[in-house]
Amino acid sequence: MRNQARLVRTVALLVGCLFLSIAANANAAGAADGRKLYLEHCAACHGLKADGHGPLEPELAKPAADLRFLAKRYGNPLPYDQIARFMDGRADVKAHGSRDMPVWGEEMWKYPPGHAHSNEVSEPVAKIIKYLQSIQIVGTHASMEGNPPAHDGSHL
Image 1 (cartoon, rainbow, N blue to C red):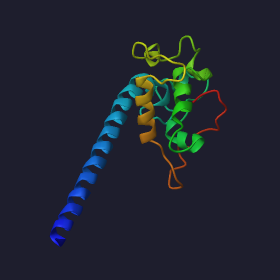
Image 2 (tube, rainbow, N blue to C red):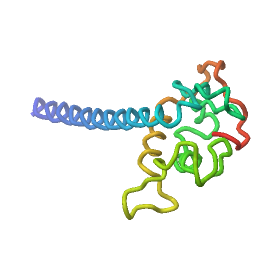
Image 3 (tube, rainbow, N blue to C red):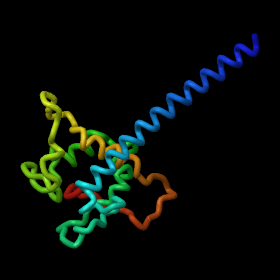
Image 4 (cartoon, rainbow, N blue to C red):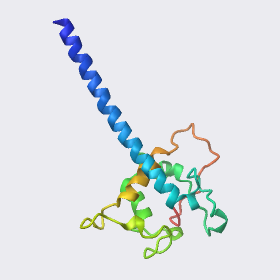
């Protein structure tokens, strides 16, 4: 009887580990997709490392934000809707351009047919937010080298 109970506990533990592994892999896949989109649409200004030092840095009127420290400004986990609003044009971020023609073009606005709603987040924006969440530097052990400037609402 003891062996059977031990076997049941072992199987339950293994099944639990399997579910955790599947969830972790799905989250990692979402972050990987988000990284690809980030590199395509955001890295020119925010940099390959999301540190605010992209190749267009000298051309920017205001420095791009160091996106690795969003959690320091807005909390961890990142406030999904607030970050999405900065990205998709629902919140006015001067550095991102006008709402009619944001700097990254129309791709961030695309929704599946029949699903566009003022409070919904498009799939590309959602994937980029997953990536941004995965690169947050939190805690006191973080290097102060890339410390972000104070947020004044003019850029993300």
